Amino acid sequence: MSENTEKKVRRQYNRAVKADSVRLVTEGGHRLTDVAREVGITVKMLSQWRCQLEKHGTPEQAFVGHRHDREVEVTR
Image 1 (cartoon, rainbow, N blue to C red):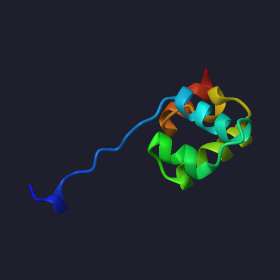
Image 2: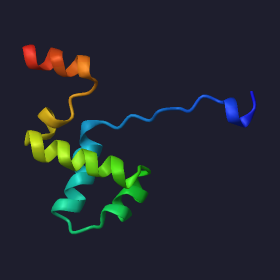
Image 3: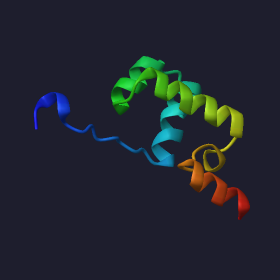
Image 4: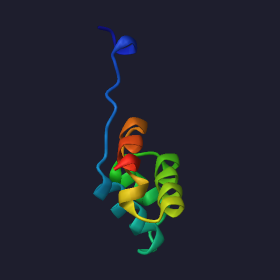
């Protein structure tokens, strides 16, 4: 395969990584850009994680996985 046609691997981050990354920004006083660079994600992704956590309150509710996983979690 050539470089242009290679399939990109989509990284997945567990709930703890997401929560810890957001906590570094909100409670640790670190800059979004610095934390995002350290984790290996974009600033936009880290901002989305922060918004999810602010909206849902706890990491368990904010970061439940794919939409199907969220629907299963809600019905439990």
